[in-house]
Length: 222
Ligand SMILES: [Fe+2]
Image 1: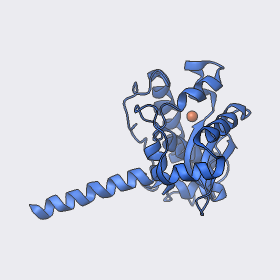
Image 2 (image 1 turned 90 degrees about the horizontal axis):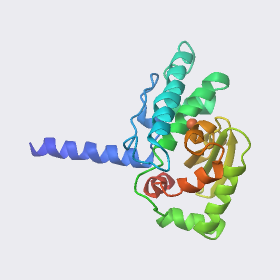
Image 3 (image 1 turned 60 degrees about the vertical axis):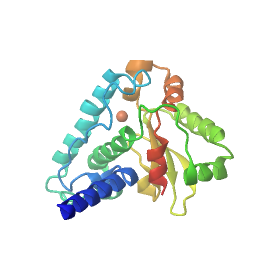
Image 4 (image 1 turned 180 degrees about the horizontal axis):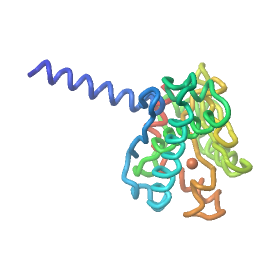
């Protein structure tokens, strides 16, 4: 019994470590992708993001990217690849759907109903090294997210030396295609905010700061 309990504990620990440090491609089985569940209730982020928006964004938009990807990779070299490999090596419709699947998995796992957290530890030090203070970083990131023209993503990403960058990507762009590790990704496609904020993207971005789970973002930095 003790052995069984120990194995169970190791499994749970491994799962937690994987979930905290990765939170994207490796959680998905190779070759046949499925819609990962939200890490919170659909109404948990309201009023910053409404239940209606979460349900549409996760249950319709992300699901469509995953379903499309599953159809598109049949009979291609990506049929048994993991999601990250597909994003790094594909083009066209396969890239668009794979990258949007990956981007949204990162995105939905970035938020938490625990409001008003702030970064800490190594991530905070790296932010302060690059931008002087968290407030300065927040201003720069907000400016990038509000000014990105059209649909796309704004990322906080790190290079292999741990240096941080704010990267604006149009459409389905993800920093892993350029050798960076994504830590925080904000979706500025209109489907992410239009039902709740109409054309007021700056207001939406400003409110998002209160639901970012900095424990998760910090774990991705390690
Ligand atoms: Fe989206």
